[in-house]
Structures are given as structure tokens and as C-alpha cells.
Length: 289
Image (cartoon, rainbow, N blue to C red; front, side):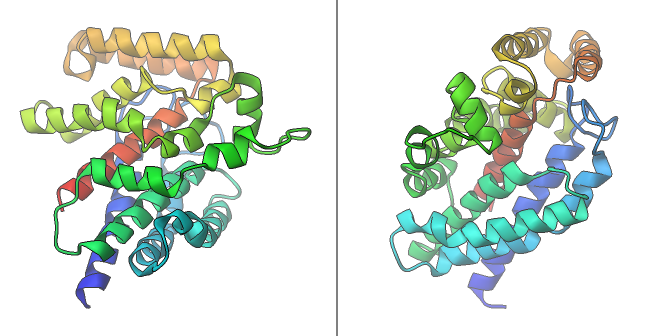
């Protein structure tokens, strides 16, 4: 394999590891993990493993397209869209039409394309999350305006369109066009700090990072099932658990388990925060290349 092929395969591998690490982190309140199905009755841990197993090709082609793209990176999103659509179809086929990773096909696919484009310009360099996210921001400029603000929503179809009409939130589109600001401000710094301090296990560091993301994320999954009051309640509880020490204290562990049971009972799934945890992991792993 030549250097370009090795790099492309490496990025594909990091994206898949990000998916697998995210679902494996346990316990995660209301989310599918190794302990339970969270607030879901149509998927479990193995559904996510199945889904992850078919997405490598998607991330490979998004990365390769970024490397080989000769036009401005503003046209790169359009260039990778067919691979994202194909990846979604594969996901739905293997999960019997359960949406496990649609948001991450979008988010990680864009990151793969961005890092590929940066590699094309400077192949022999270390990659910093800020540079990647700045490229993501440039690639997706105008996405919210095109797909949400400037559309005539007489018959909103997608989840994101419905939530934008109801609450004015821009969801994952807003997150990517910001250059993943929630991740850069509230996910990656926490994970890096925990990794450097070597506190707890890798699993524990991921759970603690998730809790921090939950306090700051405008979670589309929670809003879709419930409302703004429920979102605020979840954010406040995650903050309270962190103040107890989170997963690194006996009180925090007890509170996380109780919160998990509460989320399951009330059908609350902070899936938007889970997706941003996977993005956080991806950026962390890329910086370690």
C-alpha cells in the first residue's frame, strides 16, 4: 500500500473505533451500552456492532474523496453525499430499518473528508482538532440556511426540519457548521485532561466526558421525544452528577445508575450527546496519529 492508502485506511479505522468506543462506554444514562438498551426497545449493543461493521467503506470513501478533491472544499460536502446515502442504506439494511448511526455517518463522514482534504495539502504533518473543525466549518458554510432557514416548511419531513420549526434549534447541522464548537469546548478538553491525568479507566473517562457534553448539548433526541423542559432537566441532572464527582466517586456512580433508571422509565435518550462523544473520540484519536 502507498502512503495515501495507508492514511485513508487509518482514518477509516479511527472512525470505526469511535463508533465502537462510544457504544461500549458504560453506564450511559438512557443510552444503549454494555449494561442495557437504555430508553430504546428497537436496538441493543449488538445492533450497534452490526451497524458499525458495514460503515467502514463509507468512511474510507469520504476520506479518499477529500484527498483526491481538486476543487474548493466548499464543494466537498456535495462530493461525499452519495457515500453517506449509501452508508445509510447499508446501516438500515443490517439493522432492519433501525437508525443507529445516521447522525454519525453525517458527522464522521464530514470529518473524514475534511482530514483527507487537509492531508492532500500537507501530507506530512500532525493534525490538530481546531484545524480539522475549521475545515469542517468552511465545508459546511451555509448548510443551515439552505436546509433549514430558507426552506418553505409547509410539510416538514425530516426530524431536523420538525425540530427547527418547533424550537428553532439547528441540531447536528448547526453543530457541524459551527465547526463542532460543543465538542471543542465541552468534550475534547475534558477527555484530553482525563487522559493526561490517567484518572480511572478509559471507559470511565468516556462516561465522564459524556456527562459534560450532556450539560451543554441542545440534544435533538430529547427534544424530539419530549420538550425544552425535559432537556433542561437532563442538563441540570448531568451537571449535578458531575458536581458529585461523576463516575469517579461512589456518590456519582450511584447517581448515574439512578439517572439511567430514570431515563429508561421516562423514555429519555440523550442520543445527540452520544453522537458528540463519538466525534470527541474521533478528534482525540486523529490528534494522536
